[in-house]
Amino acid sequence: MYNMGSVKAALYRGRGLVAVEDYPEPSGPGRGELILRVNRAAICGTDASEWAHGPLLARPPVILGHEFTGTVVAKGDGADRFTVGDRVVCGAGASCGRCDWCAAGRSNLCADYRTFGLHLDGGLAAYVAVPHDICLHVPEGVTDTAAAIAQPLAVALHAVRRSGLMAGRSCAVIGAGGIGALVVAAAAARGAYPLIALDIDDGRLETARQLGAHITRNVRTADLAATLVAETDGLGAHVVIESSGMAHAPAAALSGTRRGGTTLLVGLQAAPREVDLFAITAREVNIATTLAHVCGTDLPESLRLLAERPLADIVLDRVIPLADLVEQGLRPLAGGTARGKIVVDPGDA
Image 1: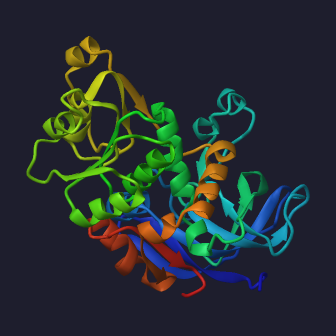
Image 2: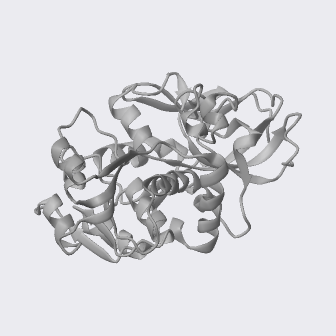
């Protein structure tokens, strides 16, 4: 029950410093807030990078976790869409609702955007406080484990929307692990044809096939740009989505995009990269980028897809207790050995 004084939480204090410990439960709820008992929380490369190399974006000390779902145990004034006992999924961060970007429907670029698990206490805890206006009801038939994947799937859907991909157009996804697998699922939902997945791991490529990729290629020993061109009749793909974050991948993605096509950059680069701007300009290749998701647009579509298809079952690696977060969660993610999404049960500490 709520109002226990302290709860178990994964507290991040700096590089290599994550510990599951007693932490004061969230106060409130304030006006427009919900207190959630967290049912499941997924982790991603951002969490692993903060643990292995950070602080990068995080402002410690902070409770990690921006991909989570829970049950409402208390609500503040103004949170009238929800009742105690509702299962909800929450967006990744809070926006102000007043700046130019929020007014334009681009709340992910808010001038005062604050991400759970980085700037605000997140969902790798027994309870979390969240604004009601970035929460949605979890549909019947969507399990808690599946609902924990709604936020990263929303990120993938936002990315594909940013690329301008249309049904019947070719799309190549570089990197099919973590967010890349969900990008494949999002591109398949958009009707990409052919949909090509490139990776250096056969297990990830099998996952991509299950998610809807028509062509998969292991490029561990192959030239990435040449493979992209070869798999698209020598023309390049209409859309190439780079989600691996590998140093050589942006240049290869641009080379493998057809004239007038679009290269979308999803994977974050650790340093500036050199690209051939003359070749890009001469072929009128569009370069797009993407960040996070827009709650009102991407999160509802994510929940709809999770209700329609067993996407969570396909991308899930394991469900772990909160106590094993570092050894069974962050460490394999940082080391590149995770086979898919890792989901945490905060109630199993």
